[in-house]
Length: 537
Image (cartoon, rainbow, N blue to C red):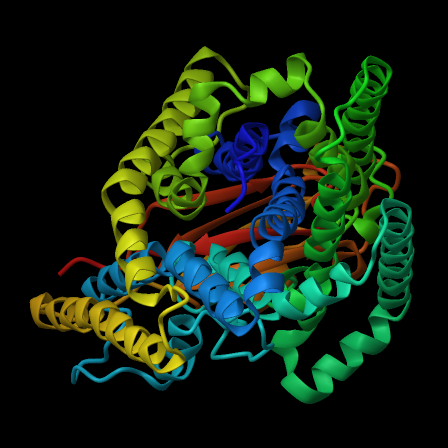
């Protein structure tokens, strides 16, 4: 392992913070009416956060492991895989088990006879082996990545990251063949141009791709009413194949940095580096505003890779140069939070769910809402720091001690270590599942959705309930529903106006009315979540 670069650890925390804030705003501060522009922009920050994660991951992986893989060959590759498995798996599998246990308690995992339903048994192996984002496999009413609870849903990126790690040795060889920094920059430019061309082609043929998905996977794969579960959404956002270019760009950025690492930057280069950093930050903000702001253009690239070029420049400048921005990112508190960013990413959605449960939408963002949001963010960060210290670090050390090969260790012994690691992991998994199964005394029935109203563009004086028929067709009778608001399906009731979406429903067996509001422009494929809780006996 090379000398750590603290500013990149701080940058990793900012990537996690983008995702947390994006999910926290609508989860903890649901607004009615037209939200302010800043609310809409921050609410869409998760896309930037994910690109920052993936490009930064490529940089860190190549920076830390290129030399060991090049020098140690097979042993270096096995040690790399062991290190990354030990980094990802302990927290991932623990939260998956806890979420399954929680769902079992709610009656959503086992059936009345204590048997795993086909839907669960078909999906579970993919989650256990972290491959759920590798395949598009509709299962029941959802795509494979949406089979369990909210933590499992966001773990698609962990699956995608695991794919990157498995193919990194090949990337390592390819990047290693590029001998000079000039060739590295040319390779990075070609990668960006090629990726944008591929994305543009995919969007230009979205209709054809959608027809293929309908023919092979059925209605659940269609863009129209199941956007988050659609084949096209998986192809250009969730799948590791469309995100691999971000990881490779990070590797190339690290290669460029390593070529200059032993050459001290001159005062002139430092000034130019600060200018490049500021321009890249400004470019990233401008891109984000163009993608998610009131004008809402450049939508072709916001699904993936759109931020990657400017993010790569930011990462290079933060690693190479020394200035006030880099100093702030390198601060002790930010680095500590960056170390715990993996815990923060996986746990924040549960914290938001706890603080945002049964909240009534408000018409404006005030002091109370700001305090609630701040408290939620502090709670998420605090929980991640605890989890990092008491579970992530100890579990990682144990697994790395078991799996890492030194020069005197045979490959046969490595396989033996992998076997014992699997025994330890699953020895913890199986008893938890057994306890979860045995402690649930009753199977709780679940209420179903009865859609009462659904209006697209109410803030633009569009007719009330103009989306009711569509929402009823998609959601009525279900326990959980993801209704995709798509202008192609609903039509445009108020051209030139950024339209919101508002729906109300009740759960059969309850008189309580529930509601959801999506900020403008809702018709770009935003998803309204409608759900009903289990009925208590």
